Image: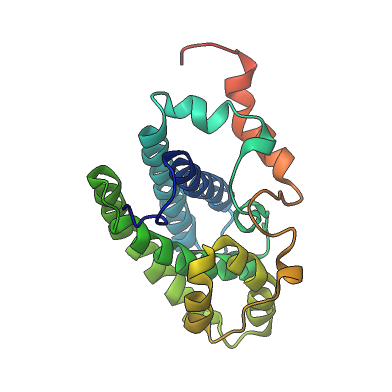
Length: 224
């Protein structure tokens, strides 16, 4: 039995879960990269650029587990086939508080699912998850630093309140109670999660997909 990401699933279901994680990392990397050159301090220009690069690198590694052509899997699907959560699709520039709130919430949910992947009986998956987790540890440190800095700011508190249902919907169902415990928050009812779970797409998703894929689509079939 393979316990990660979830047990008693078929290979196809397991691959769909890993694809969702890869799509999360790819799209969040793109959203984070939008801060390059415009972050509120120079240090964060560097930090967010580095985090974005790591996230996209994680996506690439996961796509390579799922397909011989990772680039085709990443960029050649129509927008409705992407499995990324609405949380990572949202565009927050120039709202720094909401960006940091997403960073804090996403990293917590991501840490829980990485625990599942590291417990996988598939050595390639478990090894990759351990490597990703070592890099994500720095992302979590960065998120915690900003959480500590902004936690008493009303704008940040409001951003966390707004994004909490998105974060819960991003987490695996078995992890949601644990996520609630980490933040000492109640789990929203199913009605509040509608439109925020996988399979839904946030406002601005189509525009991001157009931007992400425009060069590849400009010369279909080309070898870059």
